[in-house]
Length: 142
Image (cartoon, rainbow, N blue to C red):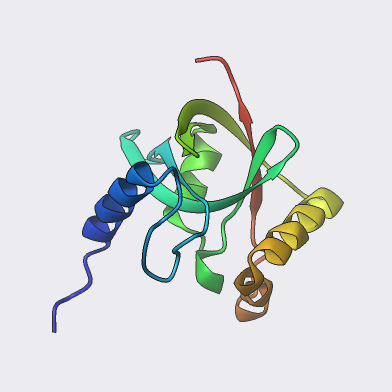
């Protein structure tokens, strides 16, 4: 049995997304719009790339730091807290963004919309004791 290689998965997913307009062509995420987000590492400052599920809220993009309902935040959460500027690639367009973590009613409204669009997200809060962070990404000038 071959060990799972997350770096290879990310590289292959990025190639698939770029070849298919931001939508994977196969696998469990086939047909879902995904984005490629590059942020600066919280500790290293080096570029770190993550594949994220997003939805639109007006002109902004919304992402949720679910990590599948794990008890710890995904690495990209820490990166955005330390360095809120990132690059976002969605639907064949790449642009700089600034991330803002939401709170209260805004956070709940945005998470509920995310779960409505992507039903598996509805179960994630019950898998963890942490409040799952939700970020709004707003385009900025380069």
